[in-house]
Image 1: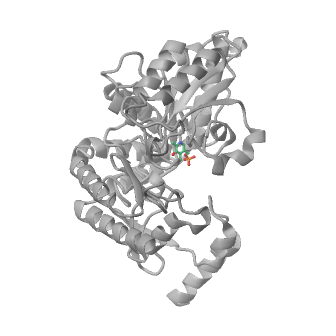
Image 2 (image 1 turned 45 degrees about the horizontal axis):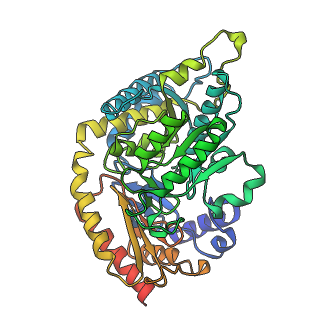
Image 3 (image 1 turned 180 degrees about the horizontal axis):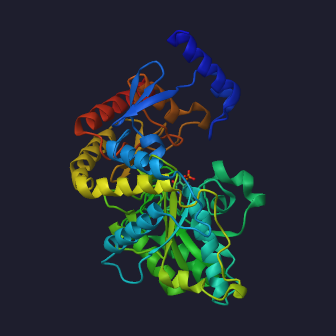
Length: 461
Ligand SMILES: Cc1ncc(COP(=O)(O)O)c(C=O)c1O
């Protein structure tokens, strides 16, 4: 079979058998799927041999590039020993080593913060499950403290914490979440710190972060029902790369401390260097009570997640067997050896290569490009936290009028730039840019230039 026939067969099988996530399959099966066969550095290659810059790090997971020798080797080495054994009633070598490594990393990252630092590691498989664990742990923690009324959570509008039902309950994106409302538990919602489209109709900084004031009103009235506040620190990613004003996260931390509710930092997207620091919460010197980690933890190689809690929370679960204080939660692949080995190699590269130190000039380049882009007639807002960036396209810049939903402007830009060898995936009309941290300055420049040209072609004709 020639390459064309082989590819046509794969495409046909994809249309026939695969159901893709977050995808309108009617549209998908009418098109031609892009099928990836290989990757190297910050590039991915399709079955026709065309290379693309991986502009969204394979959905925000890849950190050190594809086919990184050190991570490949670590997985192969682990594979020669064992691929998986359970963490229920057993332990394993890489899971223990990684737990120590994560605890050390959190201790050093949050050394300057007041209060306890999370260092008890509970593994699961993906970002959503790390959030489920955080929610269930918080809920159960208060039960063990004898406070049975803490059955609700507080989250932000525009929040995204994953797609399992607990994570959807604390989600705040109508398009993804409102349909499931009848299945969800009670969650209080505070305004999103989305200054470009402020829900309260105010302007920063004269608003003096009135959104925090709203959060305080909820806490004042309901703190005795609230187990935890959950936030994406610094940037609400899937909500549209919404960057909170400086001081917002610190304000949330202060409110949680004053009203005695737990703070869960969902660093699934922001963790592992994406924002320029190892964890986004570091930017504001905030140590959460619980931190959720996934995506970049394995450098984008394997599904793994960790929910890390403070010792105080962990201790509340200790007791005699009959006291029923056990955390009855776990997954088949909890603490998987291959994933933990990949994560250890990923962290070692950060340390050895000075990945974060090398990031500064690339962030500056990205920021300068974003600033220039704001001159374009249909670019309403540009936002970034380190290497996580979003460009919000609008039909009318003066009124901030969005494009009609059906016009799919973000997608049109993504499809246009794909022809130029760049793969990106938008969030509505927000063009998302989040390449692997190790992308070279040259490749970054090339990618940004191509995206700029596509934005112009699509929005200006
Ligand atoms: C902040 C945040 N939390 C949780 C998740 C869910 O992670 P996963 O897709 O691995 O379940 C995501 C995914 O984008 C995320 O951005």
